[in-house]
Image 1 (cartoon, rainbow, N blue to C red):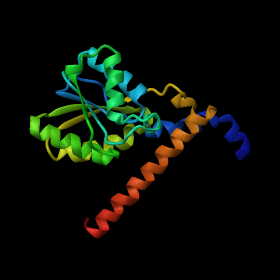
Image 2: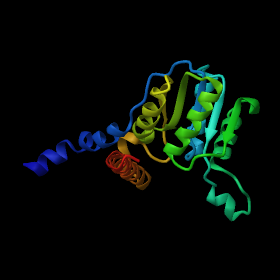
Image 3: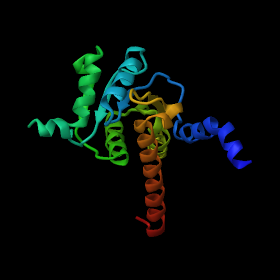
Length: 199
């Protein structure tokens, strides 16, 4: 009986795993758009589309990690630089996109952007990341920024190498979903540890 139920409801059961990770907001005009580093092609494309639709006046690409493929070629390129290049490739002017070489994780990038928002008195931002990353990133950003009176809207970019609601059909989708759940668990453990130690 259990096997039969599993076969019949396989697709909705598997989709529930991906649906949990994807949590985005309705887009609205903001003071600033933040396109997170990593997956520069997908996130950069989505950021450029939102910018050209009039949702923000300036774009920030944070990220202090270096792109390994460029290191092999003897060149130093940050993930944030690569994301900016893709946004420019999509027709956004260079003067409207800033790359910040700070932050090697979602939390560190959030702290970097929070400092930028304080300095420039920004009260509303759009954060662009991949769809599977929206729930975790949204939790990190919204908890931090709400304390400063800053509204955060999350938007997710579709992946080009797998379909989010059919993630189990490709190796890329399987890896992406597994990685995001592992990182979500890690953040929960780390947050609980900080509460217990007062760190």
